[in-house]
Amino acid sequence: MQNFECTNCGGKIFFANDFCLKCGSKTAFDPETIAMVSLSPIPETNTYQALNGDKNGPVRRYCANAAHNACNWLAEESSEEGFCAACELNDLIPNLGEPDSLEAWQDLERAKKRLIYSLLRFGLPTDATHLGKGRLTFNFVRGQMTGHLNGVITINITEADSVERERRRQYFDEPYRSLLGHLRHESGHFYWNVLIEGTDRIEEFRSLFGDERLDYSQALARHHDSGPAEGWQNLFVSAYASAHPWEDWAETWAHYIHMVDAVETAETEGIDPRAAGITFGFKWPFKKYDAYRAESFQSLQEHWIPLTVALNRLNRSMGHSDFYAFVTPAGAYKKLAFIHRAIRQSASWTKPG
Image (cartoon, rainbow, N blue to C red; front, side, top):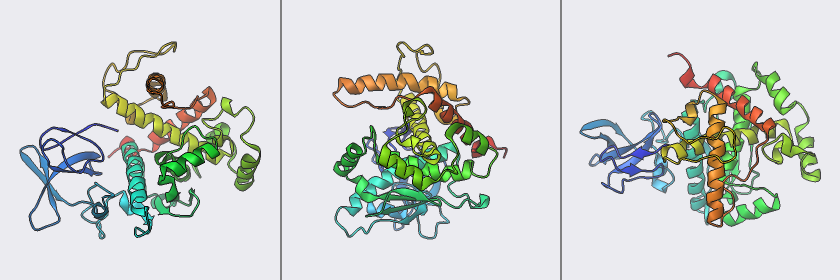
């Protein structure tokens, strides 16, 4: 995540802020510019004047879900229902009249906004109907299984309960479980459809991840009955990734976004990890580095590894579990590099015009 400055006073503001702590201006995230902007209310309307120092910007309005304290994004003027680019992707939200549903949905929206931020930075489409692949959609509901089907990501809102989420993490023997992790993983299934299925990348995918035509239901049942494949640590980012090639892709996709967003955040905060005992370690950064636009996967990897070493040690110093509780084998790095190339070959910012 990038750092942002108040466009009225220059004070530091964060992605979730709806006002500047320094000057008090209203703030919002503008998905068109992928940046936070400051706003001045226009009397007797529900619109705001965007502020940019001495210059006034366009008249804008908050997403309709700001009324529920669930969104701080600006809505498209053409949006009939007044929803922003991220909230327009919702198909179902919880019954807000039920106990704890509002708080759960607010947490889910905060996590979803971070996912959509990454997709915007990558230049990936959330609507692939022009490719015959449908549209990315979210259902936040109670009592249904978290998963993905035909572009629809369903998240059981009980995952927003930190106690319940930790119980499930321990039950499934997972080193990591979070709302953002779920969303990144499930989005990977949608982007497999967009970036891999029916494309000239399918054979390379199968050579790295395996043949996705294997029976999916049987593979998952076998994984849950017998555990991960023997020696999975040598090829996969997680035990669950060994269940089926589709899950391997989705797990690796989620880890890739973890890497990119964490490296961008570290760079913007000026964190300077030094790798110890790593042959390609170096003092970082030499210059401003954009993880979302990195030309090679190797350069991203060379930033990521010393960062995880440093942050794992910091967490241990505070008595916490590791920041990145995974050991990524060489075989998995080949898969991560494949995802890196697939995103950049498909990104809107790489295309002329």
